[in-house]
View 1 (cartoon, one colour):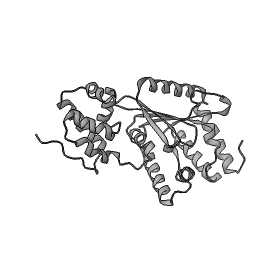
View 2 (cartoon, rainbow, N blue to C red):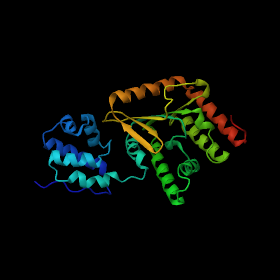
View 3 (spheres, helix red, strand yellow):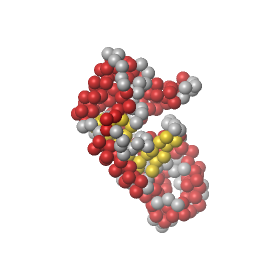
Length: 280
């Protein structure tokens, strides 16, 4: 019987690779748990590879080829799956985000990428890459704006953001840039496309003092959480860790201002920027 053909990079490589993995695993008579055990990963992780929620990395591909007797198919096709327009530390999270049914995010700084305007995104990327060529900044901004198109769907995914008040107060670029950026978030909230809360300074210490947090849910795969730091990011699927992060987000929701009061504060700060008033 002929083996599977190499994937066409112009199609959806990760989805196709996942389908081939499921086919090869079932042909070998192995469960997801049985395939995961020698890789030191869970059965749910194998399920996420098969559903396209997670990216297959080269070290796993080589072992899977050996375990399933697929003659180097998965190793050869990792290159197609690895191609991404996003920074390496965020690529896997961005790809998972695109197929999520619900996203919950706590932002310390800056405004979450899905909600950024072009001018704001330009200032953010220039701050991250002060010596980068203009083309690199242009490409990063273009990828971010394209990623935000998932909000063009009127209902899916559910997006619930909790913004630290510092997100509103930390100026990125000109006052006009900030006013436009905040007005954009306010418009999405006012149109009921997103649920937005602000965690005010007066709330004091809270459940996610260590940094930002993103949670994602999927139709046919377990939930994931994503944590990040300077030039690093990690997608996590351990059920206990995801449950702890979910609790942290729930506590942030309970501590933050209501959506109505949050929108009023955000609009007031945007108005301050428009009128050139100073912020504490």
